[in-house]
Structure formats: structure tokens, C-alpha cells
Length: 95
Image 1: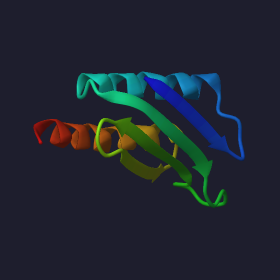
Image 2: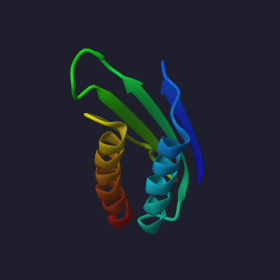
Image 3: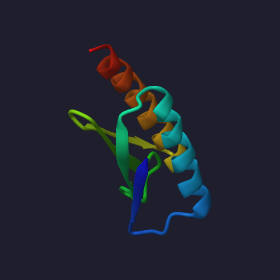
Image 4: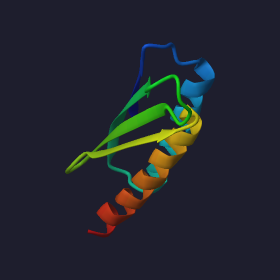
């Protein structure tokens, strides 16, 4: 799977990139037609908590899936996105 990670206004650590790669690789269990993913990370309103936003566009055969979530950490936001994508892929697989 081709994964592109874009961090807006900050540099994502290698640890964060590896975390994202690992989580996205697990989605292959739910669908074998995943072609790639685009991940965008950004900090919204740095003065408040719950300000880390992650959005994932998953490219599959047919319509692409898009999810964005905001949380206290990028890891939590990615986990929330992955949970939603799993459900979407299961529905897509059943259809």
C-alpha cells in the first residue's frame, strides 16, 4: 500500500510515521483492494486541548473513503480514524 503522510506546520517524528504505517497496514485484513492512503496531520487552535487533527483518505477500488478526527494526540486521532475506516471497509466488503 502506498502511504503519503503530510504534516502541516510541523515535522512528524519517525515514531509517529511508523505508528501510522502500522495502523494502516492492519486495514489490509479488511479489504485486499486498498491501493493507497493519504494522511494529513495538523494542529488546530494550539491554545486549547483536543487540537490534533488527523484526516485519512483511503483509496480503494470504487469510491474512496475519507475520515477526519480531532483528539488530544495524533495517535488517538489516528486510532479513531482507523476505527471508522474499519467499519466502512466492512460495509464496503458486504456490499
